[in-house]
Length: 102
Image (tube, rainbow, N blue to C red):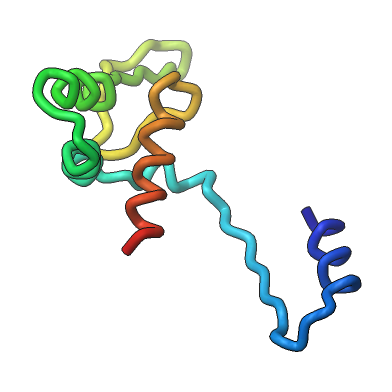
């Protein structure tokens, strides 16, 4: 990415200037609020049982931790989506598209 930016700076033929920034999306998956996800997918025209199914898939995840070789009780998170979940990239794209349109 850095090479592409430097190349663009070097060969730019405009007097307007050029700006670039890097956005780290690694933590963005963790910070997605579930109620906002639901309102966004409803706003784009998905409704009814499909919205309920998507939200159930996002909110029903349970995690378990091994502490001192002992499996602890399961717990759930209050927000976020899982990286690696097949539906997560689609939710994230819709979420990002909504934020960029505002």
